[in-house]
Amino acid sequence: MAKTWYPVIDYASCIECGTCVNFCPHHVYDKAKAPSPAVTDTMSCVDHCHGCGKKCPVGAITYVGEDTGWTPPNGKAQEAEAPCCCGGDAKEENLCSCGADSSGKKVSIEYLYLDLNTCDRCIGTDAVLEEVVVALTPAFELAGYAVKYNKVEITSADVAAQYRFLSSPTIRVNGLDICESVAESNCGCCGEISGTDVDCRVFEYEGKSYEVPPKAMLAESILKAAFGENCGCSCGYYELPENLKRFFDGKAAKTPQCSCGGNCR
Image (cartoon, rainbow, N blue to C red; front, side, top):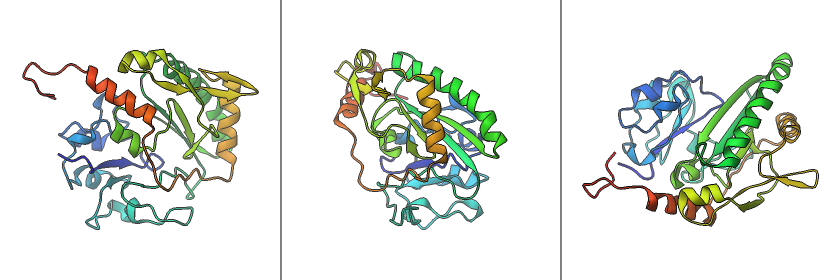
């Protein structure tokens, strides 16, 4: 099994057919989220396996660690070898996470979070974001834009690196974080999950800070990001924030082990 080899989904191209989720026998994908392909167990991916990528009908799957020259079906270039939209190169562990799509009028909204069972901020933001997306989608479609809304649970440090995750929760539109900077405060819920002190995102709007963002802020930010000129590219070096490292380490330490003494799957 591999630490530096796992699939990366281009959600702007993905049609959520569920082919990759149903094909993979190693439980790399979370079947509970099917047909949406949520990569949650990177450690179970078999080194240099291209099975799910070969099955994808739209070529939306590439791989971290790809070094064989393999390209997805339908002629799509491997992302790790393709030039980034900003003019730089996206290389291996520091893949470009730009979500912009220059081939058509698309709005890709992505919600990245740590927990939707315990964390009040993630749960509350999820509910508000759902309402805003539902309200804005008819207007986008009337203007000729296709809206893609996807949720991603950040379950490990590897997944955090894959998505270049900086703070929970995060909302991106066409690859661009709707918050210009990361502001955080202590989150008792995530501290309870991990058994450590953890800070989670607060949303700053009109001079005030909110643990759960108001609808007006999200609607305004999504529209601004969707029609702005910035592509949201985040090329360059990524390092897991110490805050998130404590969360994942603490969560792993609290996870009960099998009676055999190992971490059975």
